[in-house]
Structure formats: structure tokens, C-alpha cells
Image (spheres, rainbow, N blue to C red):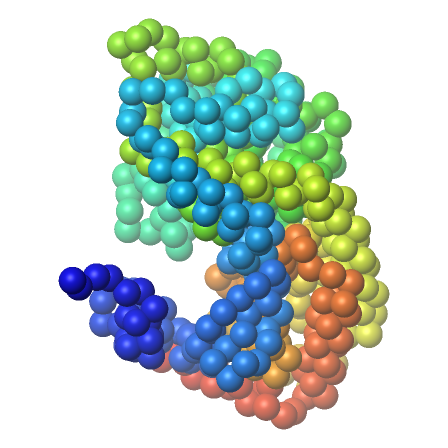
Length: 462
């Protein structure tokens, strides 16, 4: 009898990984990885570390863009998934009420006691789509406000509240929307006075560039929204579940109680895609107003047993290992040590963020030699210097990081919440070495910068 053997398949075809992607998937991904020298072959991972085919260890300061909040292959989450598979549950019958979704909803809502109900989907963008639909239906209004430079996902509804033209170009028409500058309460009020706004969706810390909302902004925005019968939607897809040193990032500001909250990423445990939209009782009761509307919003794989088990295990680990407090402590330590370097390096302009969501921003130097090199990079494409820092961090120091967005001179650090003080030491030492080389004005780093310039110019012509 023949059968499927995953280990044999990987042993036989795993070496073709980059060729398979180039041939059958997004062909630009392997091209980009080859250009940056990121075309590693990672063979295993645990916690905050990878190991490549040669046994070299790498420190992960990216956490799969925040998905791996507990690091990779946490034993509690692994065991929960083994248990749920071994239980042979009658999953996704669609016509019963299994216990795991209710238990996970109960646990999530305990961290947001002003909210009452949860819808489970499969991703962060789906959680945002749910919030947009619910806000529009509950208020009877079409328009949603968002912040410039925001990122809320790439499906059509979420794309409508995306603050970057590069993602939106070519995909119009989108939903009715209007961008306001983060922190501009006057602009927010002007839009609300038009009377057609369903809600305002905001990241408590913007992922693109790592910009926290100004102090007092969320509470003031909430008061304006409620005065005009519109809803506050907090996108906590990346900032939620302890990332910023509170369970939700909006909790850093007293008195803020969003009407809808979107979570995903770390709730998956890094295994099973899951998204959740938490909301107030009256909103859900308007959407699901009768038995005829019981399936008016649903997801085929939403509330599946594996995702629910992973989510419950994640929340248990967070409590048992006190990861929210750990993220606050380690984040304060890492951010303060990096901020102390600003006076030593003229290319280093700012270090900001909360908890283990930190942005390192570079800017125009003052000395003549460095200014010339900086200008060369900026003329070719903004963001190349930050990429020049990311590359040696990986290639020489075996630390995985990435820029915070296209055309931004910002590196975003979002490591697993389980990193240690030893990992902080390792990163700061590596970053200092890279800064030393950048300010010496020569060497391989600037040679690579010239390579990036050539590549950028070729791409621009192509």
C-alpha cells in the first residue's frame, strides 16, 4: 500500500525551495531574497532561534511579523494541538455549538471586560473586514475613517483603510473612506460632522514606522466618535496579546474602551491561522438581529477546533509565564539601551515604541563624507540605508530583522515575547558593530549600499 510520507518528500524535494517559488508562486520573493543575501536554508526553529543547514544559530527579531509571539514550537501549544487532533472531535459540523470557541471567547473577553462577544475568522485582515462590516451595519452609515500611513490588511475592505498608496494602486474602486492624520482631532471632527461616518479604525501603534498614537488622542477620538454616533475600532492585530507591555495596546491610555477590537497573529501560536473581532453586545445583536440573519457573516474555517485549541494554549502560556510583564521589562531594557546610542551615531535619529515593538529610525548625518553617501542612497530610493543595516545584521551577526515599510528608514523590532536579557545583549552588541562600520565610511557595508543603488535603478527602469 502506498501512502503520503512528508519527511521523504521534504528530503527529496526540499532543496528545490527557491526554484519552486520562482516557478509557481510569487517570483519576486526569491529574486528579492537572492539580491539581499537572505536566501538562507533554515532547517529547524525553537523559541526565538533558527538553525540553518550548516547548524548556524540565528536570533529572530521579527517573529514572523508578530505571528510568533511565543516563539516557534512552544511545547504547550504543540501538546494542545496533539491533544485536539487525537480527540477526533466532530469539528465544523456548522450545526452545533462546540465548547472550544466559547471558552476562547470567554478568555479573550476577560482581558477586555467592556466588550461582550467575539467573531472568529482566520486572519488579521479578516478580523478588520468583520469590524468594518459590523460598524457599517450597526450605524447604518457607509464611510470609515483611518489614519495616514496605516496598515490594516490587503483584502478589499481592509485595503480601503490602508494609508499607503503603494498597496492601493491599481485595485480601485474601494469602499468609501477618508484618511486623517494621526493625532489631528480637528480633521477627525470635520469628517464626523458630515454625518456619514460609521467608524474610525486605528492602530494604537502604527506598524509602518512604529508610531504610537499621541498621548490622549485615543480617548479624545473616542469621545468625538461617540458624540457623533460613530464607533472606535482598535486594530490590535500586531499590537495585541502583550506585544506592547499591556495585553492590548489601547490599555496604555486610561479611559479608552473601543467598540470593536481586532486581534490575530500571536493568537495562532504560530500554527493555525486565526483572527478574532471582539465587540459590544448591541453591535452583534444588530448584525445578527434575527434567526434569518444567523449566517449573515460567517467563515468556513472560523472557530475550527485546532485554531481554538492553539488560542487557548497561547493565553494559558501568557499567564503562566507572565509574558505581558516580561515584554514590558525586556522592551524597556532594549529600547533604553538603543536610545543611549543616539548621541554616539549621527546616522541614528530616534528609538521609539512600547514593550517589544520598537522602531529604530535613521536620518541625514551632519558630517560631509557620510552626508554624501546618504544622499546617494536617498537619490536612488528612500529606505536603502535601513536595508543596509538589516543585511549585515543577518549575514555577519546572524540576527533576522527587517525594515518597517517601503521607503522608510526605520527598522522594526518585534521579537518573540520570550526573548531574554542575553538576547538583548546580543542584539545591542551586533547593532553597535554595524553602526561602527557605517560611520567609518568604508568597507563592505557601503559596497553593498552601492549594489542596492544599482538594483534600485534597474528596477526603476524595468
